[in-house]
Image (cartoon, rainbow, N blue to C red; front, side):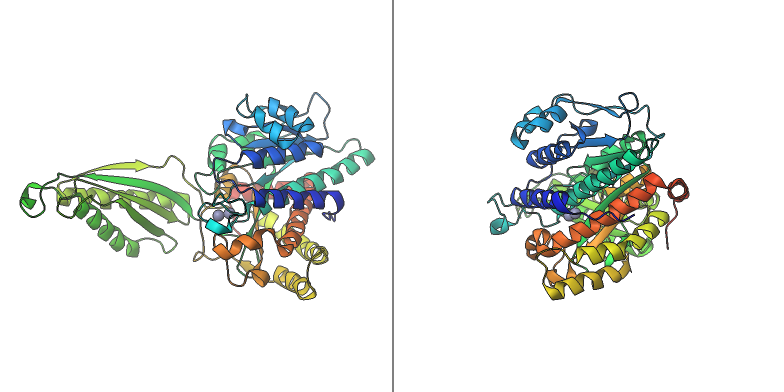
Length: 470
Ligand SMILES: [Zn+2]
Ligand SMILES: [Zn+2]
């Protein structure tokens, strides 16, 4: 079924995108963003609660066809505040109770979820629209608005179906998932099985990219961060170097060991780190050095193998120099993404119609209309070379997940997400048209999950087998 993103929903989505773009908040500070989305979800008939899974600035908004008994019960004062007040006032409920879930009916009612990210990036100086230095160079303003548009448009379609067929059952969720650019709130949510305990049959998210072509089959690398602290002994570097134990030598040797390791691991492994403490003065043998390292690999299980070998490089370097080493691993590990073949195939079927409609969006020049449909037809499979990591990967291990990447290449002139030039792209007319396109693709694919039992089961089977489309 066609689900165009039109009229009041599209206008509101663009307001949300612009509001977030103009008020960029970095990871951990997304108070305005989460309040704004809660307020708007409530205004369009969703029940809402802040602090999903106890995470500040996370939220849950829910709508379902059910009566009191079977409704997903969500508690939390923020939801009620958001329904009747301005976003600024809704923020006052922060920290009170959070979202309490009663999921007795989970798994019995077809359920889809749209995931909204909304954190910005620091370090953009004068490009920051509010003078804070932060900016939406990764387009998470667009992600949140697209998820909102998809959820509300799908709800409208579901309400219509319910009016025609009282036996129709469906649940639609909009989840606010903050801090994607740093520790990844979805990692904690997936670890706590939030997505599966909500009975989600499929979760949807989309992202922008400066690379040409539409990509529904993305690669994401599993990633661990490890901090190594070497302890040695200080001494005068000229007078008594023989009395010292050189912690900088240990870091250097660890880097050499890891450089050799690079040849002996699978090619989708990426090893990169920095020295955050390298000593304090040239005439003192450094007694303490710190290196911060990222280990990435194509599969989370293989990642653990590489992490242990990188740890051994640090241990070996410590042994060689007489230092000791402390190894501290970041608590959250990003997982690779499990692409779901059924969801990808179905979304690809929806794409041409969605692109055709999106190309008619206001504000596009004639050549941009052509570019948009051409780029939508240029389907690419992600390669490992440009692959990064993202917390949607962890979601894909808890429930079936779809992750669509839409291209701004015709207007971003070689710039890609996180580039300085990309800030202007993420709330441009072209991005607005892509927002309508992405929201339609998500809503229409989600509609099939809700209404077509055979399709829903095939999505589940792909998830259980962990099938990739390659
Ligand atoms: Zn980013
Ligand atoms: Zn991003």
